[in-house]
Image (tube, rainbow, N blue to C red):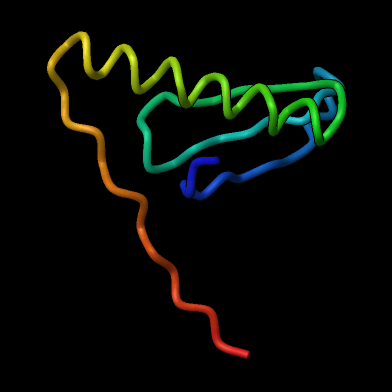
Length: 69
């Protein structure tokens, strides 16, 4: 499980859920259901890491957001 922020929204034109991972440039996924989109995003994050390592690029630490109750 990765701890990166994911932004999930519905794309009316494509009729799919879109997931963006803002902390990882160009890291996006989609799916026909919310759950599928999240699973696909996890796979894309793994591939993003693999590619970054192969290219010798740094992998950013997840940002921590403070949540107040």
